[in-house]
Length: 407
Image (cartoon, rainbow, N blue to C red; front, top):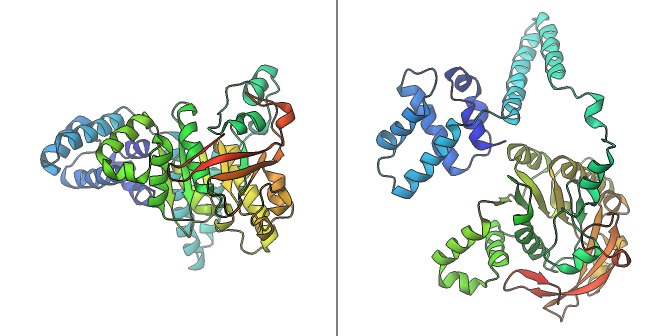
């Protein structure tokens, strides 16, 4: 959900009273949290039915935050002006509608328990109304067989290219709905994601960003590694002049974002919710797939297959998913791995992904990693060379600068 659209939704008191409890449950960044609290107090202090955002901005700066510095004032003024000119988007409206409907039905079920049998009929009517409002027609699921559109979507060279050029020649460009997976522990898989994501960021469709769901090492380490990968700098260089690095990193991003969602216990529902609230996320990293919670009633093999199916559906809905998975113990010390060495999966994960990139290493070689394209069902795109579709190659691993390079 777009955060500013979410706040524009409560510009009228009726909507505020109806939806505030749901919006408080959404993920909001610190700036949006501050605005939400002040909107709440504004309604409490003033007998207004509709917010005049220009008047609210004056109230916000003069009465609520007179000590803000010029930079803070400029940032919040821009946010409020954006809210002022923004209509609530469909995702914002739908989510609060869903939660409001759920609350009504829960209340009616309590009435049924207390003996009001008519409440059950009312609940069914509300459910039927909800389904009617949100049902998809068969046409929504049909592929448009227009040849030009198919070429644009699948083959035409306007996809996203890799930093690691060997991947451009072997698997080609990545496109919306692609699902990519693979690795071996301690091969630099986190660096692989940060190295590629920071290179791909500027190529994303307009208005789209990247997100990394991290349940592995600490989120702050991921943040630092992203800066290293983006700017090709060491941690010592960052520590020597963090102010300059902050400016350089902001310039590098050029208005785009790489979100880091750091939650060791996250499950599929958590990720679904966050992606729904952040529809701008097109490039999605899962670090690591097998540690995502969910589907625990199934045995390990079936659970892992279900996780892969879930990740595939995320890719189809939002953009591209690159998921890190584990290789099994047989891969220890081995250069080039095959798809049978994917831990915990016989064929389920392998069957779901478009591209399976296996990364191996020799223990004594700290700066080399070995890539094998164990699966590739992509059509020829971009720089792909047909005879390299299942290539094996080594790459330089620069751990201190957070990059993989083809040398």
